Amino acid sequence: MQPRKPPQDPIPFGFLLVPNYSMIAFSCAIEPLRMANRLSNKHLYQWVTI
Image (cartoon, rainbow, N blue to C red):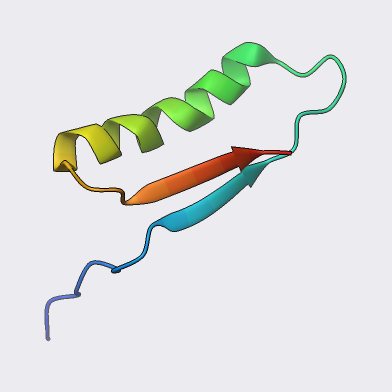
C-alpha cells in the first residue's frame, strides 16, 4: 500500500449562515480547520462564509 500524498491545494469549505444560526456550531466547525492549518504551517483547508 502506497502512502497518500497530501493535496497540493487547500481543501475548500463553504458555510451558509442562515438567520439565527448557532455561533457555537459555526465555531466548532471552523476551529479544527484553523488549528490544522496553524499546526501544519500550511494552508490545508480554506473556508468562506456564504
